[in-house]
Length: 176
Image (tube, rainbow, N blue to C red):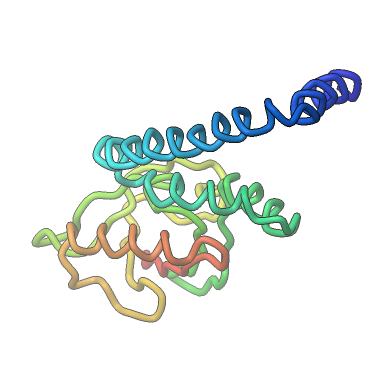
């Protein structure tokens, strides 16, 4: 690694030493970031259309990679690994904390009259280990009762909640 780096560094250094070459190399280097930038922006809208649940992650990652603090980098790595916790457990209900969009943990279907959300299937093993049974209903999103909320609206709220709560997670209460 180091030798290769030194050689390229000496090469650019020698080029800059000659005053006649200093100007052209700078003017050649400047357009390059400008060309890259417009090329990278059209990619975002297309990725958003193809996979809307991914877009907050894709947009969040470049910002985190730039940040110089190693703590942030470590956290973003641990968050990309799916994480969920059992917050509270009592007779007939469990409160869990998720750190990503719900559709990475479980599949859901709508409850009676198209309202509420019923646990249909497990996607994440750790989530399954929390012991929430299939057919349990989502009772609360945070502190808000969502059993009467329409399924489509509830799914949108869950997605929005996940994108704002990456670091600290968000709580869901399931009712047996």
